[in-house]
Amino acid sequence: MRRLFIGVGFSSELRGYFQDAALMVEKYCETAKYTRRENFHLTLKFLGMMDESTINTLIDVINHIEVNQLTLYFDHIGFFKKKNRYVIYMGLHPNEALTQIAIDLHGALVEKGLTSAEEFIYTPHITLCRQAKLLVPSVDLSRGIEISKETMVNNITLYESTNIDGVLTYRPIYIREV
Image (cartoon, rainbow, N blue to C red):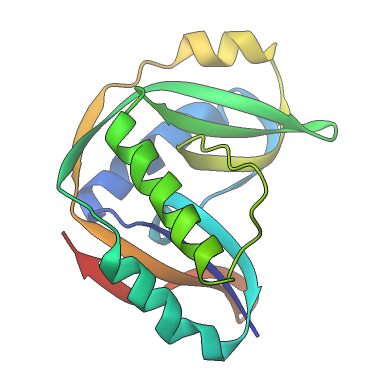
């Protein structure tokens, strides 16, 4: 069994931008677990623990989803509360084409029996840190950091989330260039 998800990978330069934003967030946090530069990605669909035998079907689904190059515009810092801590993320301007890719991917995975048919709500974001204990009210955080970055989606990637020598690592298994 492997812990898998499908997402969009980014260039080293853009991952550096995300890391810089995480450093800006750091001054607002007493403690947090920050995303490693190598792990920044945009999740399209989290799959969870999947049998090795599903990988070829997942690759087939990725290859048959209609995807054209599209532009993403990152424009804000956001957060959501998880228990008594926060997940802090970089959010995107609404993008119908991206949302449609995620919906189509979910539908194809349901059709193949690889995920449940439950309601699918897609909120695209880049996680900057988890388990954050804030030093300021959360609203101050979202107002205090200016975000403005544009990029093209040029891949859909099947990732494995694994632990290598105690380090959380998102390892690409398959990359479809678009």
